[in-house]
Length: 436
Image (cartoon, rainbow, N blue to C red; front, side):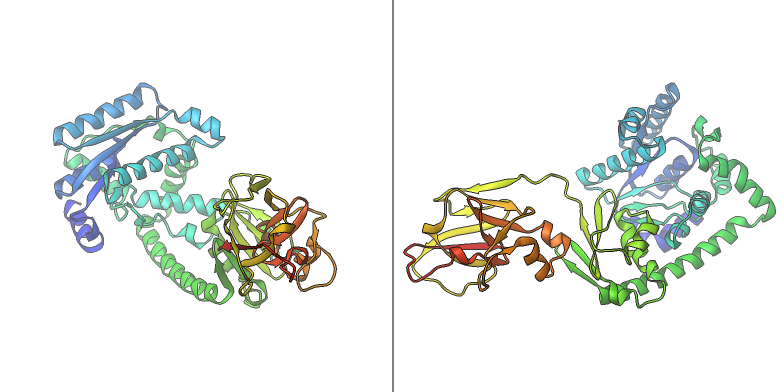
């Protein structure tokens, strides 16, 4: 196995050579074999061990064991203790989900703070099969059936081509020490049930199960590349990226067969999981929304608009003093007096300063707001102005108003109010510029 591992590194993971590597080592057989192999190859390694404090003294003994192994080989060791149960109760998440989050958040911080290049984990072929079966039983898209990836950003899994049987045989032959995790014997978790009950039965039906699985994964991965290519081509045709928004043209998208598959490819990375609701959104009325933990997907006329959730509630209003020359928040704006007016644009206006009542106010629109749009006769409700200008719900929610007392001076970046425009009798001209 050692030669096979070296050949695998040379052929497929040469990127690890001459790099600063962080090994995730629990003390179990898989991670200890990875530790042994990487040390034998003289890779530049250091070790990170997580004590999740879930098995009492057993967890502490695992930590002591890993520490002793690192001391023998003079390898730098990082240890972190997590109150995993407390964190899981607080976040109302499963122990497994929380442990994974805590583990990788810490690994990534070690990588960044110490200028390391890659995190190495000891996932192997049987782990990939278990992940495949878990995703299969829960319902998954194609990407969930392509197994554990060999590399995912800075995370690399060098043992993926090797089976659990190969790893166990190598450990015994080379007298690699390890510790048994008692929780692996429990059928409390789905992964363990598959490992103890389902997979042995499948191997009994097909002794070459892992070889067959590798071929299946290879075929599925090739199919996934075709899906990715098609997704990118369609994306360029129907999606427009504007700042932090993605706008999907539904009229074009829905002409394609199986357009739902493209929605899955585009939105799954943003944490969306309710695919029935997302598919229904394409034909829903304007205004309907679907949420992930981080993003909002909004139906607006003939578009779907994806944008990040706002983490903070914006203050009701911001004031601008009479002699203030600049505003940096919530928008970047500049104020200055000029002798005459130049070309007025949507982002630059000129107003009669004597008609303003200070302090001015910047705020969001409210139901019942109205103003006198410049270039038009009479007043108009802001809601009607938005409709006529074909504002999306997102456009409306992100629009700011500049107000003098209770009157709208400017729908910022859109339209000046006729009452405040410069006339022949104006003696003081105030130039206001909105910096996009």
